[in-house]
Figure 1 (cartoon, rainbow, N blue to C red):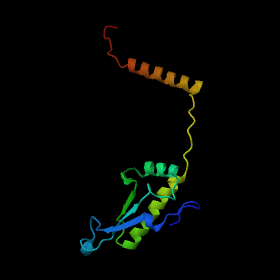
Figure 2: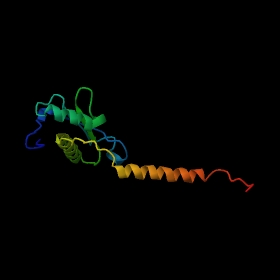
Figure 3: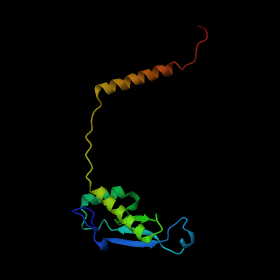
Figure 4: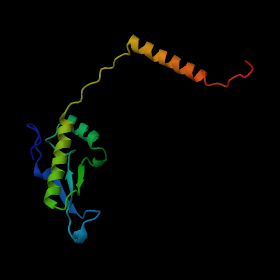
Length: 139
């Protein structure tokens, strides 16, 4: 399975298991296993660089297992073949996202104008709140 020009996943790295889908499905819901569980052994994959593996682990979140595999479950359609396609597409998209190196954030300081605007807004707000006090009737 080709992901990018540099990354290609071998068939031995993918395991597919077909399970029964939950939810409504008519007469076949308890008989036909249309949902697919795609398992990709990302931790042991020789085709993924370590930096991509680390980013993939962060992006995958709960789908990343303790033994370094990405598990994707799809039960969108009633077709086993279509669910299988969707699962493979999702895996490819996850890996493509992990290949993108995130931009390094350069911290900036607030401008003098923004500081002054913030302090002025705080002062105005404080004055509004001060006017909410009890009114003295003796005046």
